[in-house]
Amino acid sequence: MIVVEDLHFAYPNGNQVLHGVDLNIQDGEFIAIMGENGAGKTTLVKTFNGLLKPNQGRVLIDNIDTKKTSVAALAREVGLVFQNPDHQLFCETVRDEVAYSLRNFGYPSDVIEKRVKGMLETLDLTPYVDSSPFMLSGGERKRVALASVLVWNPKHMVLDEPTIGQDYQQKDRLRNFIIQLNTQGKTVVMVTHDVEFVAECKPRVILLSQGKIIGDGTAEEILTDKDLSTRASLLQPQIALLFSAIEGLPRGIIDVYSARLVINNTLRGSK
Amino acid sequence: MDPRAKFMVIMVIFAISLLFTNILVLLVVFLAQLPLIWLAKSMRRWAASMKGGLILALLIFVMNYLTGSTLTHSLAMTVRFMALLSSFSIFFMTTSPDDLGLAMEQAHVPYTLCFTFTTAVRLVPTMAVDAQTVVDAQRSRGLELDKGNLLKRIRNYIPILIPLIVSAIRRSVELAEALESRGFNVTAKRQSLVVLRMKPSDYFAVLAALVSLSLAVWASLYAQLPQVELPLELPRIWQILGPCWSK
Image (cartoon, rainbow over all chains, first blue to last red; front, side):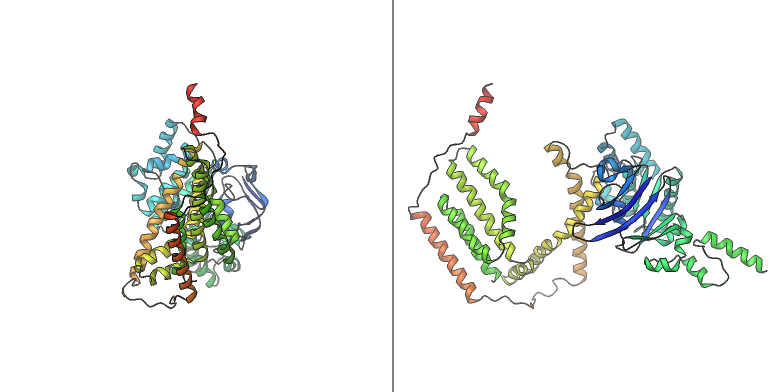
């Protein structure tokens, strides 16, 4: 469980980013943290693995206070995948890259080999096992970065902007993969701007604005709330915009599948 | 003060420092810079950069002394290092990268070189932010920077250096492409909004520097300089290692 109590955080240059955040994330939940640029989303998730320590208040990961624990220890429980994979790729082969964290955590070599092989298979990276990570395409590098964090099987996964720069097919695969992770019992927290992606995943949505939480609820509730969306600089999903513009249609529809059902029923009913 | 004149003065101080091994002269060269720093109102920043050079200064002293020089000579070499460090410190503290770029341009250094230099300086804060992100990303994968013996700690910086270098190279290529698409260096002759002009005070400073340099060259070759030898002797490397060797 991730518990955030009255979290205040300011960067050393004086920039006060988080103004009292209270949050409870249960094990196995699927969360999207959204909000305008500068709202404090990335700052917030960096407190989950101890990279940033609270100035005031506290963050508890499975009842462990992050202020009293090292990043390396917290990283075992909270896997944080950064936005830009080029900020972490440095090994000569994809295999080494994925094995890096396992070596840091002190796993024995036979376990490392097995896990790396399994991870590469899961993410369709086996053809690239001996390639240089720098020679891969953008989407492939992102998968390598994801593999290199997932390989030590952290209980909680945090993804910072996982869909940036990805085409539709890759996003679709990613969506299925994230949902699969969640089904396997992992807590998945993603920081994202991608409203349509969130509308298709339907996680619990936490809306941050100017360092405070202004909304916390299901994706249907939050993404169809015009007020909240404006405050957090979010463009509502197209389906939600369409449905709110037509009288007589129910609220709370954000994806194509549900919309199709509603429209079909409405058309049948009006015959 | 015109950066070109400043540069000449600093170069003269540099040359004079290198001409002498006499500790008294070197001390004078070092202390003579203090009024300059005070005039530039940068005493605190200068002190900070001196503190940074302290480790290196200590290393120079130890290396000199343990390989056979006298105590006085080793001290002299250390003072020389501090004098050199100080002079360059003053130059960079009192000249903005923009002024430097302008000075280089108007000293007929090829524009591409000037631009490379100014851009490199400008990108330092950007790269510092990148470096922090890389450190964060690798720490999130279990990298512990503060653990292990010296060798391990040095090796721990490889996962940080490589992504940084790669991203620096990528950024340079992108910047070059962006510049070319905007017509960089298409016209051979550039006109500057700010034109540097040497004032009488600048010419005077350069003249004074050149005169000092001539005096220094003459003094180093012909003058009888007061010598000082400190009578102290600290144990040398063979005196320390000797007993260990014979065990």
